[in-house]
Length: 512
RNA sequence: UCCUCAGUAGCUCAGUUGGUUAGAGCGGCGGACUGUUAAUCCGUAGGUCGUAGGUUCAAGUCCUACCUGGGGAGCCA
Image (cartoon, rainbow, N blue to C red; front, side, top):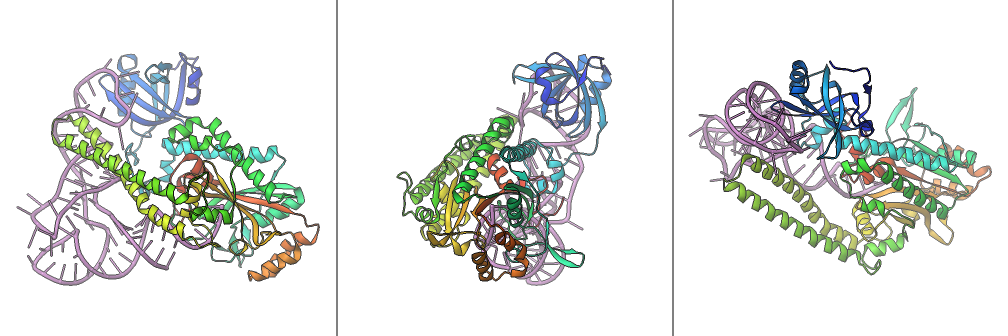
């Protein structure tokens, strides 16, 4: 062990400023590649990933033997000197000594492709891998940005209860539990409590877990997710939309500034995020329907025509990939390639096949989307594909407002000038990510609200406390709900919401 | 709840109109190679084909039910 007195314990993310210095790292092995007389060890320590190099003629026999035996995810202490790897323009560590903290059996997750089910079963370990690491850091940054945005604007974060005594919008989507012998439900929204808090503190936001017992198996749903719900006294729908816009712009810019490394690891295309600038298009529900149905153009572009064009491009891409696959298979079949080249081509073929599978799924979907968009029934809520068709025509998030009252919640305020509509708003993210925010100005008139509760056949008794908010100094107020994991998924550019939360809970997934 | 696709080695998959003893790549292990980045070479171990029935001389392959998972609908953030 050659641990000098001057060497310091450091984290990998601090290596950049320590070139030439002796240091000690503690972490886990992420890969090992060895050749005669030299071993490359990948190391991660939570703060980042780095390569360390063990050269036989520079370390003791024991150290070199240990380096040659290390396996994935063995925990180790590494002593060495920080040097610049000129080829990669990255810092690496020239190892002088190694200590094994713990070895173990073969690590289940290899550095190769795995299926979703396998990885989800290994979620507790999968979190260690680079993309998942980047995703969780992105999530953390977003959470911090959300707090910063609201705190800097005088909002208080206050928590609603998680056990609730009554079902706000029917019991079918709620998890029932036993609360000292009385049925209680896990909260599906903190909004009603948020309203009470807003009338006490002016501007508040809640930030907590939310539970929905919907048996959804889609890439946009979780049974347990985190929701941010600001609520503001004296805000109308317009101010609410202004706030949503400022909020999304703030968080997006903060992520671009603070998570460049993470976004690079996630291979995120930055253009759609860089486009997130004020103002967002604001489209009424009725106009949105016209756009979806292809009856109204946006900047001279027709939704159905654009989707048709996308479909043609997809088909062309598939044809190109298929040709590429054929070329590579032919090259392998000639038998003149080296084994390495064969492996490389096989690996490329696998990738192309996987890509084509995805593209074919899309090409199969688009005709149905077009059909459903063309015949969209005015007055109904949008489906996932309708959101995609609509947002396709814009380069940034779209706000759809003034919704038909019949398809929205009882507490939304009617638009006085358009009594069949409510002053609600949904924010739809681009790139097919869909709804990430739902908000509204709330009904502040006692009689009207009471009427709505009765219309929706909800138990008035349970809402007496809520009605008190309209009895004593009722004021116009508004708020919205943001699904954290949906936001993280979109920012990360990831296909599935389950990767946006450390331990997802969804239909069919309770462990680990 | 409904529609749809799938379950074969530790992982990712192939397996022809049902036909001998079930295959590959990766990973593991053993060995070779002094700068590797999922691309080197040689060798090696590894399987109750999701479960239970059925059809058949013969089932990984066909039929039925169930289980588990993927994608989607509904509902939503």
